[in-house]
Length: 229
Image (tube, rainbow, N blue to C red):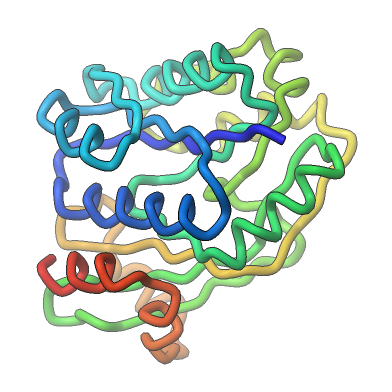
């Protein structure tokens, strides 16, 4: 069962390096899979170092960048496309569970909870957990090829750099008949450069989680990169 991971990038080279190192770990643990990054020209060489396909494209609108990545993964016959942010770090356990469910041919597979981690600044090391009630989040959304074909290969049918998760969901929702929520850990790594700041989640989610939960899923290389951010 062939799947690929899609993300887009803009600036934040250290965060992208962490993401690429996580892809290296996931490939080591789960077997090779294609991954594509659509973003800045200056990121191309870094992606090549990690054997990740890179496509250069201007940042706005961000939805167009995502659609470019979809085109590439569809062209190499991926049965599923997994959408991730370049600051989203997926645990090996989560990916293995997603693969198990994708093999059952659901229209949509995803997660209903996510962690937010502060990688720099005065809140460095803070970790918060958001858990929804049976809502498939945008991150780690695994979309079946047949659903993508039903929307003409255009997952994002609106030009925008905001609200991208909602745009894609509203587009595919009429076609999704079967779905599965899986348990597993995904971490959104926040820095001072994020538009959606960690302070928002610190105020919204009061309960502090043990950051060891994040550190424990990382490879030695990922930990080193994280320490350098």
